[in-house]
Length: 459
Ligand SMILES: NC(=O)c1ccc[n+]([C@@H]2O[C@H](COP(=O)([O-])OP(=O)(O)OC[C@H]3O[C@@H](n4cnc5c(N)ncnc54)[C@H](O)[C@@H]3O)[C@@H](O)[C@H]2O)c1
Ligand SMILES: O=c1ccn([C@@H]2O[C@H](COP(=O)(O)OP(=O)(O)O[C@H]3O[C@H](CO)[C@@H](O)[C@H](O)[C@H]3O)[C@@H](O)[C@H]2O)c(=O)[nH]1
Image (spheres, rainbow, N blue to C red):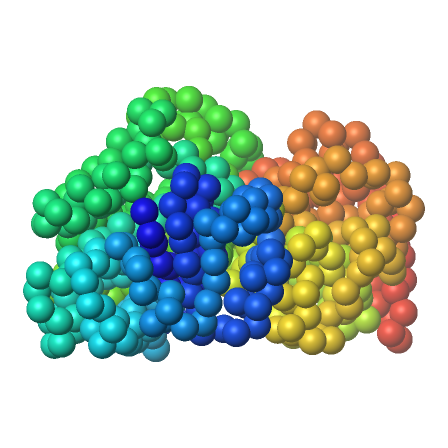
């Protein structure tokens, strides 16, 4: 089938590449000229495991093309996907300007029946809004508008797209449903379902899924905070509760708050939709509040230990991207931590396998960008772990201890087992677990701008 994807960001690129991989002819369109030029040469502007190989193959086999011209790009398309940004507006609502502008552009150039698919995350009622814009210039027989929310996760996006748990299609048109069914058949052969429903239910499903997952995380973050007070270990609690098949094991990992380009904005947008409909969605509002507090947990632990004024102290930060296996730093908890600690006077040496360039562009020389994870430790009074990249999971602890000025680790992702940390001699704080004190504890004090080590017994 001939397809056009408008918006070649994260979702557009993965969608376009995976549809090309299943034999469709795809043209990806974007207004960002630099992005399109780089993609034409097979260079992906984002780090996403597995995407580069598929991209190269499909460009080579001429199933995947790129252009900045919407007129050229949609010329032969039977289906047009909108994978455009829907960022939060000032009031928290999803900003539909990109989607509605493109709908207006399309109303001027569509000449034959086309299925227009909203893949962006959009609030309930958007399919109707898009249809209304198209109706200003187009005969009703020339288009159907479909809602087809995307559930891929960054870092495993290709796999998620090729083997989705389910595909959700919101459409009241039999003709459009048939087209969408044909398109998605190759992805659901493993037996996973395509659910056809009305547009509004489909749009709501996306917000329901993201907000529910965000709620699970906020629930576990609060549970972790309570475990700390109660002397329990949240890892065991997580395992014990997750074994109940009604609860399930996934998405119960406590940490330093959810981030990324989706959960924060989508939970906010759902709260706004509810408010517009005069419904006070209490739970969703609490989820956001808990997350805001949780983002401050790790910085709080560091300041509790070293004092609220961190002038004269340097810290190593491992991990900047909002999760491993991506270079995406949108709404990454690391950004809040950097602001908090540098605001308290600390110097930071940061390292991330993929996210450094994006942070450099955003924050410039606010922090020092280390050569590698061990270089980040030079002169540091503690190691702070923000993102659980696999290279941080089994490091050379002797090397860490020999480089750090003071053997302390603040782990925002519970990367290390308590048993291991109890044998190593670090001061170790994590999330929802007991503090590990070394047998001989060194405390730091800053006097006249220099670090003074004070040795004492374990308290
Ligand atoms: N990132 C994810 O993991 C993910 C997953 C599921 C759903 N979503 C949703 O998908 C949508 C897109 O998200 P994203 O992360 O891919 O966004 P993105 O910001 O990475 O990409 C959007 C792209 O659209 C382009 N664009 C803007 N206006 C345009 C126009 N008029 N014509 C052509 N291109 C235009 C931008 O240049 C950019 O390349 C959002 O609604 C998001 O909530 C994202
Ligand atoms: O047990 C967990 C799982 C995740 N997170 C955090 O939650 C955030 C989001 O993680 P994840 O959902 O894996 O990443 P995204 O790529 O943002 O994917 C979410 O957002 C996408 C955009 O809407 C959806 O398509 C996906 O289904 C949905 O999982 C990250 O900060 C994670 O660190 C936790 O703290 N604990």
